[in-house]
Length: 117
Length: 113
Image (cartoon, rainbow over all chains, first blue to last red; front, top):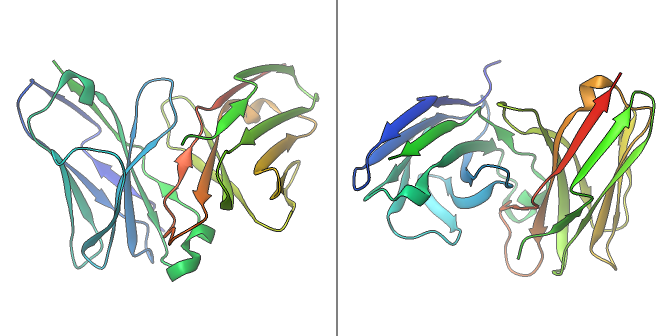
């Protein structure tokens, strides 16, 4: 049973460029959340996708956008990269439980390490 | 607002016990606990729901005090494999959560032989 897979594992970009990160959820999961983890910090919620729509969003600018495909996989796009965007980007999948989704464990991928120079 | 974890770091010898605390200023639906080893993904340990429920997983257990919005993770008879950074993630009550978690800053646990 494949877990959450993310690609690429590492990425180096220049300020102002755009980047796309990809995620395939664990088999059976229908919800994908994206988190940003700075060095030495806990993961910060970017947004969550369910039924191909952005359902919740954290405190991140519009430069961060995403997409979910019919097979539940997801992409995270970041435009106009800043040095401060350098971080580990984690994708987490889960099973939607509606209003009880706070009871649904997150399964994380190994992340994409993004370095902006 | 981010939950606060304490202590920031713990150093143990194999076989010793440890407690990690997580405190939120907001009412919570649930508290999740995850462990992340260096260079790896966070791994789910357990969920605590409001109601003071205590859960266990081998020698790792946790409790949730709904009135105080505090959770504690108990690691007994620690093993080398327990080393890593422990994060609590909270699902805030009020409105619809849909499983969005707010993570604490983490507690680094190091177990020595």
